[in-house]
Image 1 (cartoon, rainbow, N blue to C red):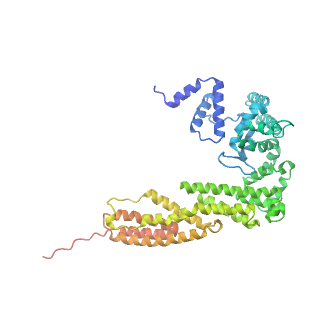
Image 2: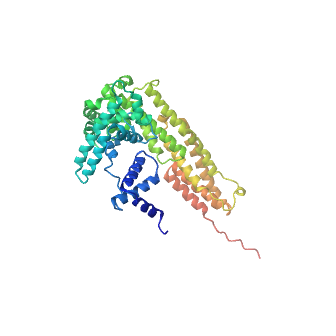
Image 3: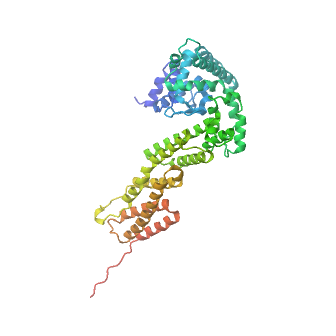
Length: 467
């Protein structure tokens, strides 16, 4: 009865047969691989690992998991299930469906052989395990190719539907292609530097030369090779420079006619995804990453419009225009709401309307300060994001109102009744905080000193009565 819930769970799990423990571990690991938010699964899985491995300190995921080993080559290309993949990306959730199909119908004998081989190679050098992994990957690629290109008379659509949902079927061909050409992908990935800070002509030419491999030039694999480059770029939009170099022109028609035109599509779709993330963060009132995301989107749109001759009525032009409109719609209402919030906080009410012990809502002050900073960030990138007019107007309005309100609050502090002075002081402190965001640290420091001086009460002695 004195046991904690964790201890009771551990006792129960330890009494299960080894096969049941292994089955539970595998199912929980698959749930985590699918990207599901399962706190309970993570907790139970950790306890199972402690029991099975017999060590409280060994909490690392099982490197010998067959599915994880076979699909490890796909890791750079995986995205969360909620996102829509662009060329060169795969849904993480698709891996579970594909693996289950391989176990059930595709290559069941080879998987059993692989699992038995892993048991026999425990403690062996990693190179020996890799030989087994590569053999299984080639078998899986062959099974996927046979499913996609069946023999005459086989109902292809019906056979593929047994793999899983349409999203998994959609990812099936690229999964098979990456597994089949793993050596080419590994070789190319080894030629990439850890950080391509400057993606200039020499780096572009070097990458094009490294990609001059028949296996990587296919329409299905080229986007995955380009994704590996994207993962190393400080400014991902610069991937379009490869398409421009191959086309020998910045004209979008000539660029789109090359196999590398997919790089432009990838860059635009990444910007669209960032815009969707930005919209969601703003909707939730989370402004921590807004500045960084706005900068990436701004630089991407400007870079594409500068380096590519994109027509406004083309597919790429319309996509860029849609991104700008999406950003404008996402931020406009938030920007326009800021002056009203500032007025509610700094408005000087008559003394009679201020209750004794009234306090300013500090949470609202924090949120308003974050919104003022948000307007300032938008102002930096306004011209390229189609929010110039509303941002400049709002920022100017905020400066004028906060400057006048701060002066007025300082004056009111000097003559305020003792009952309302603490509330006026809180208003003045909020105004000083806003001044630092809208003007400068020096100006805010000056106003802060004025506020504190106004708070000093000069005690006057009552005049002596005439005798």
